[in-house]
Structures are given as structure tokens and as C-alpha cells.
Image 1 (cartoon, rainbow, N blue to C red):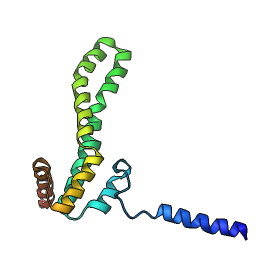
Image 2 (image 1 turned 180 degrees about the vertical axis):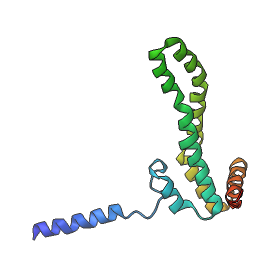
Image 3 (image 1 turned 90 degrees about the horizontal axis):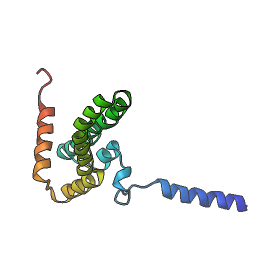
Length: 142
């Protein structure tokens, strides 16, 4: 009887822990692209903003930051060539770091919550979202 009571109470606690429908208490860093699309995408504009942030963060920033470790590996094989590549890739690495900081998930979550409440997007993000929406509205025969 005691084991049954412990099992039932443990099941209730685990069920309450796994069924989180409110995303306000989930840290933004733990949300994925699909989570943002499911919880915060209310229309085409918010979906475009989510896509823009993740594209910038995952594609552009990581690609820019990839050159510095690559040039460090080349430096081990050929120091003059690796040094030259390192000098060229340091600005790319710095810009990639800046992009990661600028387009983080916490800022995305804050912008989307504000957009859902007030309908306001910052000017630069609205312009990027409108470009993405226009791009997707073009016919495929181009």
C-alpha cells in the first residue's frame, strides 16, 4: 500500500513537471526554432522575425566565426600562411561574436512578446521581416 501511494504521488509530481504550457517561465535560451514558431508565431510577420533571427544567428554568425579556428589549424602546418589567414579572420570572428550577441534568443522573445501585445516592431526588424515576406510571396517561376 505504501509503495502504491508513493508511486501515485510520484506520477502526479512528474506529470505536473512535464506539462508546462506557459512559456513565460521557460528561459529563452532553451527554446528551439520550432518552440518559437509554436508559441510565439501569430502571423506571417512574427514567423518572418523568428526566421530572420535564427538565420542570422545560426548561419551567418557561425560561418563567420568558423574561419579563426580554421586559420589556427593552418598555422600549425604553415606558420606564415596561418598568420596571414589569422589576421584576415579576426575581424570576421569579432563580427560573428557581435552578431551572436545582437541576435540572441532572449531579445527575440522580448520582441515577439511586445509585438503580440502592442503590434509594434522596431524599424530595422520590420524592414527585414517585410523583405522576407515579400521574398516568400514571389511566384516560384522566377
